[in-house]
Image (cartoon, rainbow, N blue to C red; front, side, top):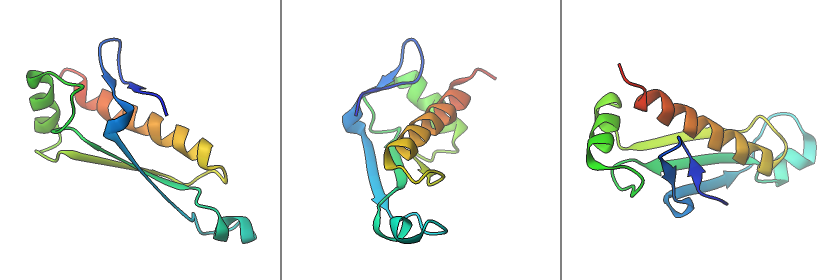
Length: 101
C-alpha cells in the first residue's frame, strides 16, 4: 500500500503501518467464515519517522501517553474496502489529535 497522507506536511511511510487480517464473522455465509476481510491497523506514534519531536510530543500528550493507535474495520465483505476504511479512520484519529486546542 501507499504512504498515508495525514496533512499537507505529514505523510506516514507505508512500512510503519502494521496490518492484521482475520475473518469478520457475523452474517455472510461461507464467504464471511473463510475470508480474512476484517482489518486491524496499528500505528506506533512514538516510533514513527513522520513527526518532528514537538508534533510527536503533542500527539502523545493528547493521547495520554498512549503510543499505539489501533483502528478496526469490518463493515465490508471486501478486505480492500475495509483497508480503505481503516486508513481513513487512522487519518481522522491523527487529524483530531493534531488539531490545535
